[in-house]
Every structure is written in C-alpha cells, then in structure tokens.
Image (cartoon, rainbow, N blue to C red):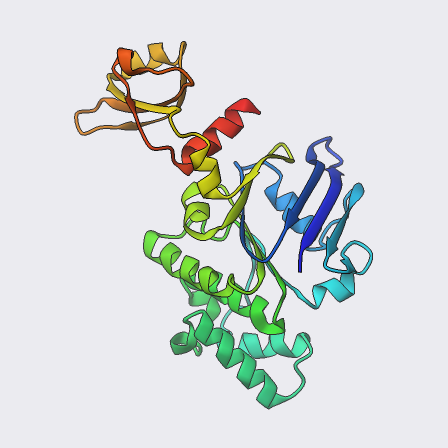
Length: 291
C-alpha cells in the first residue's frame, strides 16, 4: 500500500506555517524524513496520524481517505510519538495486555500470542515483568514499538525515536526498526543523518514544511560525485575561507586544526584541497543551504 499526500498545508494560530503545500508518495519499506528541528517533521507526522487536521490537502493510504475515514485508518496505523508516557509501577507485559484489549484482541489466548510475539520482536521478553517506568530510554522506545505492533499495522510512524539514546541503545533500537521495516510502510522522522543512512532505502529532506529533495541516499550521494573537497586548515584560516567558499562542515583534527568539507563545481586542487567521496551529511547541508 502506498501513502499519497497532495498539497498539504497547515498554519498554526501563531502564524507559523508548519506544512507548506507538501506533496509526496511513500511506498513499502523504510522511508527517512530528514530535517532540522522546526522543519515541520512532527507536524507532518501528527497530521498523517490524524492527531491534527490540516488546513487543506489530502492524504490517502491505499484506498483509505485518511482525513475522512480516520477510525478505519487508525486500525492499521502504528504511531510512536517523540515523547510518550507510561503508567508507573506497571510491567511491560501487563501494559501490553491492556493495550491489546483496547485494540480489540478479545481472547486471553489471542492477547498472549500477540504480546509474546511483540516482546520477542523488540527484545524485551526477558524484562517483560519489569515496570516500564523503570526502563532505560532505549528500552522505553522499544516498548513503544511493541505497543504499536499489537494491531499488525500496515503504516508505522516513528518520530525522532533515537534522540537522547546512547550508542548501544540506538543500535538495538535501529535493529528492531530494520526488522519490522521489511514488509511495512515505515516513516522514520529524524534530524540524525546517520540514522537515515543506516536504515532507509528512500528519503526526503524537509525544511520549512517543504520537501527540498527526494531521492535514495545512494542516488543523493552519487549526485555530488566530484563536487566535495577537503582540506586541513588552522581555525582562523577556516573563518577566512568561509567568506569565499561553500563550507559544508568542519571537524577538529588531532593537532587542533579544522578539517573542512567544501562544495564546489570547480576544482580546488590548486588551492591544496583533496577531492573526497560525498556522504549523506554533505547532501543534507547543501539542501539546507540552498533552501
């Protein structure tokens, strides 16, 4: 099933235009929605999830008119918001049985089967008796995935799921998403470039509520072949070069200089630069600079 969004608009009462005539189609698999904080990602996610109404536009998932058939759509939707609360002193297993009952799984045997299944998928089975409020950040996020899988969703939305996770928790969480993303449509909203690079076969860069670029990560990187240059320079030199060159990013070297990455259609070899392989971070910064 395909998610089709056409001419979507949303302006809040304070005058902020969060979604600006946005149109996009998203098919099966992991789709990365990449953009800085305030780009409109969460507004788009909430709108797709029927938590807020747009001012205009349409959203279809397969034959379902999402904005007009909200109850029907919610039956096949799994949504993990950026922040979610849990009941204190209630185990993961108890909570999942409760949520399964709310989602229409009426028999005890049916609930046990689906709850055990999602606990195993999210690697939480061994800690199923533990209170969710006592889970680490990464475990809570995996619990969030477990609860959204209870109704066997066809469209899954996860909004900034790895923000604040340590490297080990982030790795475990991404592995869970990778496993469930094979047969479902999963929209993965984030400002972390590496997450999209690791997980997603397609992506869009969003800013100001608009799609700036829509490609596969590999296509986007290939499009910059021969255009990215690198050089190690003292910090004061980097500040001077920033006036004449399109510096995309910089990182400190061991001797406290800066290694700068520059986007240029002209060769910079005569200025001591080395041509380097483009990466997705280069794509991201160029899109934002050109916006």
